[in-house]
View 1 (spheres, one colour):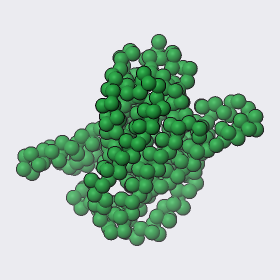
View 2: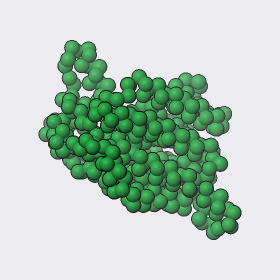
View 3: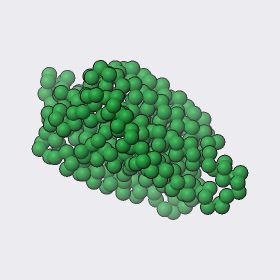
View 4: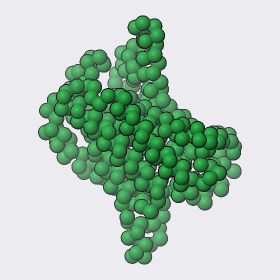
Amino acid sequence: MLQYIFNTLSAPEYLNTIYSRCFMAFFTALILVLAYGNRMIKILHAHQEKGQPIRECGPQSHLKTKKGTPTMGGILILLASLLSIVAFADLTNTLVWVVVAVLSVYGVVGFIDDYTKVKKQTANAMTAKMKLILQFVTALSAVLVISYEMPEESRFVVTIPYFINLSLDLCWFYVPFAMIVIAGASNAVNLTDGLDGLASGLMVIILPVFLVIAYICGSDLSGNFYILPVPKAAEIAVTCAAVGGACLGFLWFNAHPAKVFMGDTGSLALGAFLGTIAVILKHEILLAITGIVFVAEAVSVMLQVAWFKYSGGKRIFKMAPLHHHFEQCGLAETKVVTRFCIVGIIAEILGFMALLYK
């Protein structure tokens, strides 16, 4: 929106560059969350008498330390992100609207789930089947639009990081693959959101990688790197900046001891956002590397469930997801979060190393 205003008013050119709009989107989202965070928490408290229901099968310490903490804080993240995206991104770019749609739809799905949990005071609200159907239908729509916007020669391509000019053309198998990436990332972040500051902190860590990749892929700089050019992808950097600023602001309130949880409203939407930008930038495999903590959390749950059913009640981990296993091993919550974030930082460095310079 402001890009149109800048052009209309013949504003200085530097205000209309990608990096300037990234800067403005980041700080606008950050300031919005910091400015309205306490007000939103008071509103959530007023409408959530007992706060987020805590699973009785989870760590017993959480029944005491997290009882009464309101959820649905993801509303704050999404509103700040969407306002900043609409304000500073190029709204003539179809890919921007795909990102906005994914954030909105997954956010609504998460909100319905959170609202039902709070209203009925149950840890299980929307059925897993219904949630997956909504996730995959949205993912399918997003993938089809993204594929249509891509050049024909790279429409169904998956790039292989760290290997020069190496990629795989999956043909139409790419569509279900990309759907799994989006829905899988959504659920992986959702599973990770179990400790104060963990999911929001990891989002702040991982987003700079894709911000830089988006800027390079969609600009003339792509010719200086062994990286697949993606037309119009530079605007995705603005969306990454907006979401990153909102997550950083939310971390102010979500750090231990958390004053608010993002809930499914935030975690499902943020995970889907990560998956969508990875599909747009053709770096789905790199997402698994930079988001190794998210992957480990999701895999731990799948292994635990599978082995529990196969072995007749035995467990691989003391508790799943993985962060609860380490809690049960005696590590403090803050130590688990700190160490997981350190792993995330290492993974981010590995992600930047994938940008091979010519």
